[in-house]
Amino acid sequence: MIEKWHQLVSSRNPEGLNALLSDNVVLHSPVVHTPVQGKQMVSLYLHAAFHTFLTDSFTYVRELNSEFDHVLEFQAEIDGLIVNGVDMIRFDSNGQIVDFKVMVRPLKAMNLIHQKMGMMLEKLKPS
Amino acid sequence: MIEKWHQLVSSRNPEGLNALLSDNVVLHSPVVHTPVQGKQMVSLYLHAAFHTFLTDSFTYVRELNSEFDHVLEFQAEIDGLIVNGVDMIRFDSNGQIVDFKVMVRPLKAMNLIHQKMGMMLEKLKPS
Image 1 (cartoon, rainbow over the protein chains, first blue to last red):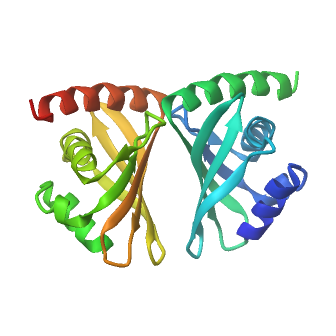
Image 2 (image 1 turned 90 degrees about the vertical axis):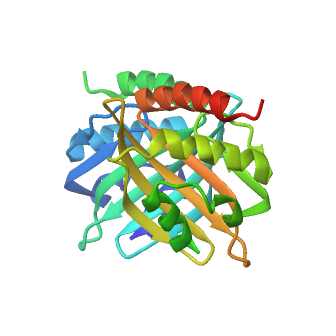
Image 3 (image 1 turned 180 degrees about the vertical axis):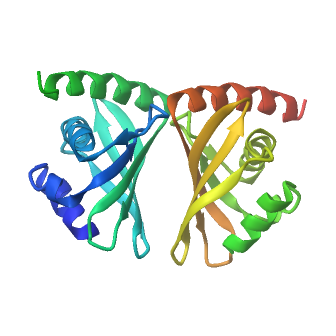
């Protein structure tokens, strides 16, 4: 299950993302408390995240796995700033993602991500 | 190894913390990029964190374990704000903590923690 996520990230290509998301998937952003609900909105956010986070330097540096839960720690350089964070991904028994939580550090990186994700979401949003 | 950490947190009592830290332990704060180095400084930070984070409502809500690495997701209400985060703890083969990383979300919680940890460190700092 988590291998499919790794394939998407390695390819830097979010095609195939939708097939991996449960209809009722919930996303918890690093910045905002209120979760993002449902496949359509979560897909939009994850597409924006692919464009924002997945610079050439993006790499997973630590990974812990259990049956349904995975924690993937990443590091990336974005606009000259080191962004360190975790993707916390929960799958259901059908192999689809039901919960996706992201945290980032330090504060400067959180502010940069806040700003860049906002611009990217604006750009990707269906008009 | 991680059981000892859980005991400390459950007791809300940082005594016994120093015995759990390697001399060369490194702490990565959620707020600042530059790590905190060495047992004395890391102990000071973790004492401040005990006083800041461990309100009655503090609880671990998800935990992933491997041989030396542990990720403990927590949730706490602090000053009326929900603080969600992870403790990422690495032990050495002697059962001592060599690396301790904390991330928090959302942004409002990060700002609150930044402010409260600053005040607590000021208070606990040997004069």
